Length: 472
Ligand SMILES: Cc1ncc(COP(=O)(O)O)c(C=O)c1O
Image 1 (cartoon, rainbow, N blue to C red):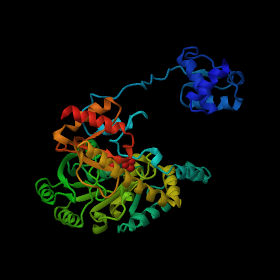
Image 2: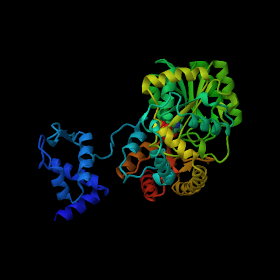
Image 3: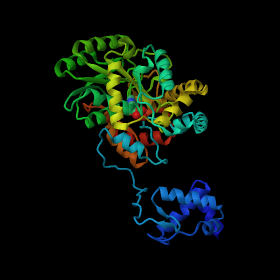
Image 4: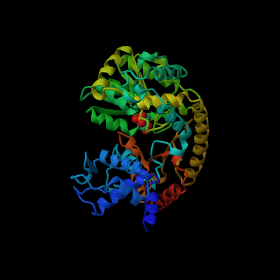
């Protein structure tokens, strides 16, 4: 009987003996056979009950104490904590009534349970990421000297990683010495720090229409006034871009040059040149968010390369190619701006995520990274072709054929409203990305963004097909 319940616990806790013991205690607390203030069984007796070693129970009790579930009273033993943990509503269903706002896709995707399909999300499935390399890097890191595991990083961030980033930027024609590069915890933090540096509440910021929805969310958080200019397959519409600069004098323009999110478009050299000339004329600063750089098969124009990091600030991160769990990104900018950014980084986070930086450094130095990226680019190309064919069969047309990357920006047939389709798909546990979450002007009602790496399951197409058929 005891060993049966142990086996069941073992399966439900993912197998480690420590987690099994922890789960057994949690079960007793949840079932009220142990209540607030009760003494836990002694380590020796519980080890006997669970048929594990005493050191396993010690470790389990220590972890439960660290979580605040139980408390240690030296010389007396362990007791159930006086404050019961808050109820976790883990089975809450999708929030169908949420407005289609800039948080729609992020909230649905980040909160999605593993059973849900996420063709609307912006990242690769874990199995497409370099799992072996990650584990190798973690093993190497576990043997690192004390400071790497214990101390704050210097404000600019790990020098060898900045050198490596500088070299990699050089391969794209962007000259940035390591002292012009500051590590951040992510691409998102990079933009946040830049907004803190460059914006006052009420300042106007120009974005593409459509653009990555979190630009809208982050700019809202900074109380900025957002305006947008339509994006074409070659970059922003230059006439409207010029008009927006004349009419609104934005302080900042945020964009992706290489693989544009959500359209997958690539900035043309002519558009890049015009945008930079206009930026100079109107005193505009540009943040070039190059987070998808490594997905490119061939290097395309970068504003930061033409401009020499004068009025263009270049940012990146490793979330899409290595791991979104290891939070690590960077800013490359003029030296005088880097000074201000260092102060802001200290003010808002003291030191950077040193462990993540060490991990990313290990991964990038690993000979396997380039091979991983090569294979990934091929795999994405194949997926892009397959998904395009399957979508076209449903009457869903890509706006353009992207040169590389994850995203397909697609128009639904018969002016169908993508928000309706997305809400309906959510009921079937499929997270889609309706066009208007990317569009400040709300001009993308009939569009969906697909992440081709997340479309392997044919249920995605079945649900889309049914939803479209009902609306035609
Ligand atoms: C264009 C773009 N920039 C930045 C980010 C955020 O990346 P990070 O995980 O580095 O914060 C994303 C994530 O999807 C993105 O698509």
